[in-house]
Image 1: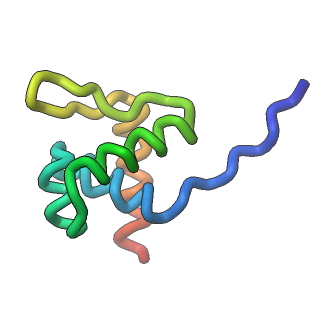
Image 2: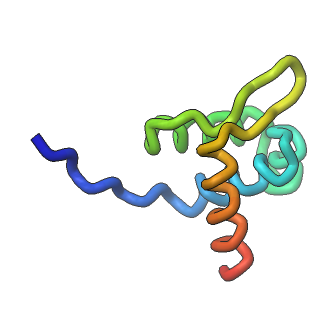
Length: 83
């Protein structure tokens, strides 16, 4: 059986991801976007669930992008600059 086509994630999720990926910090991304660290964390989790892929490696007091996260970041950064 074929999978249904993937719906694009919301722009809010992409914006939160782009900020978190650029800052490598949910806290700094939240400050930039005027939301809490917890809100950014939930956005990233929602985006990961939507895409069915892990975007960040959550290390002890640090974040690192996965290869999939790196690929999405390149595109998200370009899209956000264009907008």
